[in-house]
Length: 170
Image 1 (cartoon, rainbow, N blue to C red):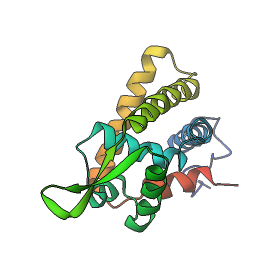
Image 2 (cartoon, helix red, strand yellow):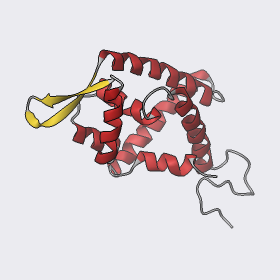
Image 3 (cartoon, one colour):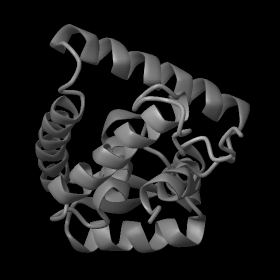
């Protein structure tokens, strides 16, 4: 009888022989180690993703940021509050629409992101340590392409819920 859970390894298969199991193992290890590496950043990986979008993409409004990261706007407000209280970002009036607020990284926020990116890259190298170094970039690139295609096809999919469903299993 085949397993109904894509992350459950069927008894007749060796470790790593199912796609879902493989992705689950990589994601679980990544999540555990990244959360540990980012424990000093408000909201850990969620704060990190917000900072990364704010720094590397067009300065977003809160609404655009919520849509881009598929984070409930009410939850996003609390995360932004904590990032702002830590001095990492600030809300600025949008000069084109004074009703909207743009989220802008401060200089300490840019420095914190650069340090966080260094730590995340180190974690990713450890997580992908079973691959030759030259294949790690290929894996990251292909995973990114697949994720972007999935997001484009189903932009309402909450990545945090997907991560939680894999990482919070007993």
